[in-house]
Length: 487
Image 1: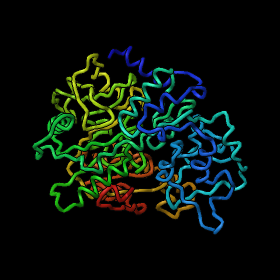
Image 2: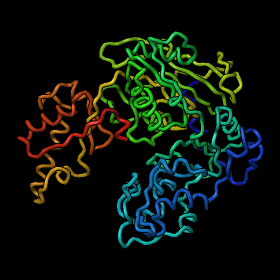
Image 3: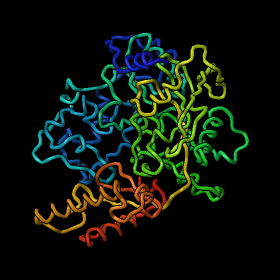
């Protein structure tokens, strides 16, 4: 596939235009595994399933009639039958700026709610009615949703979109601050019902397996070249909470498994494990500066292309270079599935008659944009030897509020700047604060208000801070024996 070909795919998935509401959907429904996995967008369902849980539109300050508070979680929203819910209500609108934003301070951050941590509406803000939510010109909902049960459903939906010049959007959990997993008048593929592999024994110990074949064999060859002990296949509809549980609980806490493993992941349990997180590079707090970002963890890819073909591909030759974290890819080999896409036992992988440029795809899907070049149906990740325990240092939006009782603005600024200088030195000039590069690299952060460290590096951080600041204030460290418990 040439650069021109990649541009074509980009154009297909993002800029195809058609008034989708007038389409006859029956031909698509007849090709799907069940007509029940298709639904045209219903605005009343959207309100009931995606707006009511936040309770902002009703001006109740998140409080129920019995005095208790609503507990809103994306774990709840992603399982709603409509498939329309976003992580924040405002992100169902263009640029995550819906009607609610007009009446509340801040950005979409104000509508991001964790379990048991409801954020009340701003006092005095106007009530937004259901009709206003539904009638907004900024509403960015698809025309219809398909919940694929298998790769065959994905292929048929993409084929229908191609035949009808219809935009395709892709979603796993709607965990997108940019609102990129919902597109107005598109055909949305909600991948949550695709097969989940990580909870069902997809972890393979490359140096101890005797019957590896296909993608597992190809992925393990690359893992061994990278000096990685194991791999994990993850379904296109899985979220990181499921993957972390599969590795850190199902595998690592099983006494029959002598060897334990670590997986690089997103920072929230409801982040897609093979979707937008990976497509945007994959930032994390669990070893990113030691092991690379999410896209560095990928060994092999399975996906449905915009022409509806199901393919798999990954590096087939590589070269080790001094100073590089991992071997440099020289060649990428791929195959087309010529078997029955509805039944994985009947898949048949062969060389493609018209082969895409798999080398271009390999680089494009690992950071080139979610849903741009096709729909990922499964991914193969490398695993690492465990560097536990996990230590977290948190300080909220203002370190002086988190760790001191200082209320003098001048002293607050001095404390804050001192901590900021130390924080940056620790991460980027570690020797200047008496810290080794290795210890520094064991710490990483998904944002500016939390630091996740492995291998005792959290203790190194605290000791270095005491030296640097003459212990201006104490910094707390929370310790976990695995990242899943932090989620």
